[in-house]
Length: 69
Image (cartoon, rainbow, N blue to C red; front, side):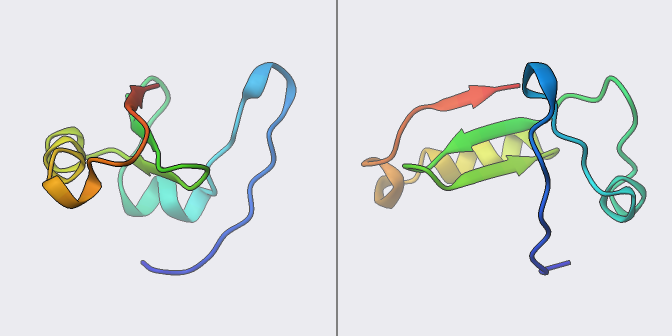
């Protein structure tokens, strides 16, 4: 899936992922995702090991630190 979707930040910073994404990636309430801030561009992934590996590559060293949600 490589389409752009718009989400809104609700009270207390809650963001609801579109149902089509939750179903496609089998995400359920309570699942943990990884969030990386790439200088104002956010990457949100359910695949922790892959995101961590990509974040540690040398060409990414200039970006902000990863933050788990």
